[in-house]
Image 1 (tube, rainbow, N blue to C red):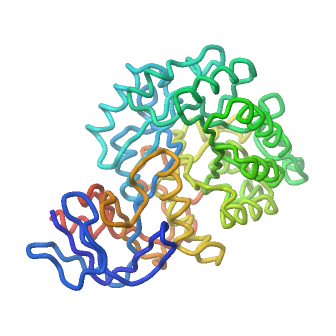
Image 2 (image 1 turned 180 degrees about the vertical axis):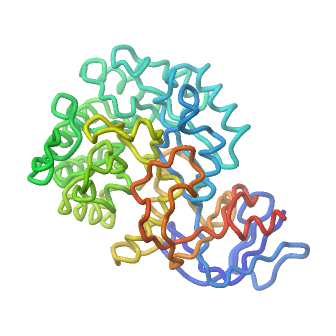
Image 3 (image 1 turned 90 degrees about the vertical axis):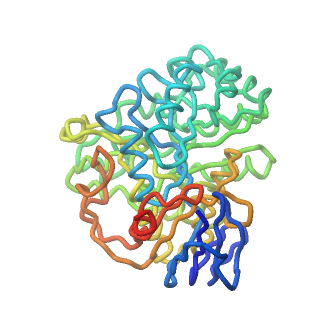
Length: 430
């Protein structure tokens, strides 16, 4: 199918531009920009001034296959991603069993290809069973298609094991994703330390636990030379160490979840468990520091950290409830809060949502240039709506944005030039 996007507002994160123009898609690729006329036989899409940007690359998505399909399947995750303008999902390996062998990775890859309309790339575990004792078969997993290695929110506490894993990963050029946190300080906690959490009687963790975990990982990165990405930096105390590592030339990047950029500790309010996350929500000062770090380029990637939990896991006292929130469909409208607040322009926003994660993982996506894959999202950044969690495509409905007023509607999502979601895409498919 050849598509001609007319009257579009082109958001190019690589060039840093936001301008009117046209775009041609042919054979699953971007064929040309700013053509005056549609090619013969092309399907013309009048964007009517809506934004056309590279599809989102969401790093760190949890899918419940294998082991927890009742929380999220590849089919439901794929629908949720397409509805939210996410064209590439990078899944976490914290499944049951974990993705720690080529056989499990092959199963995940086959299921994803058969069930989802978007691209799925999988991460594998750094250690077997995420137990922190024995290194996974990194070489074989790389050959089987793993894009990165992580034990997700389980920290490898044995420094010698961690050093061996990083050394081996370095020899293969593999990317390691760490979860900066001191497990001793953070074990059994549910909120960030401070007056607010103390008044509610919640077990708390100091922001210093994140800095301590990050400092350890960065020391090991310096020792081994591995490619390293911190999955979530959420406190101002961690930023100086991250800045020093980058200034020293270490191959280090960092991410932050959209929840930590748009919510703070006060949103827990009356112990609403949809706001219980890992790490916990931070102070407003920390939130503002993270926004500045994203704007300045110190933090490279913004993701949803999509973590589906069923009703039974969330309908518990705050301390006992499972942590995590779904975010595939809410990532874009929540991120647009930063745009509407004047913190980031749209090219900068899509740099951290699309271009930077694609580059870090060695993917072709994230660009709006001829020859790039036609993974695109067409959206109206100003369209207001009130989120109803029961309308989400995810099987689990644990979103902290339930009932929130948001702006930003996806009008069309295209994967390799094929329309997969949105009213514009549905009209083309019809």
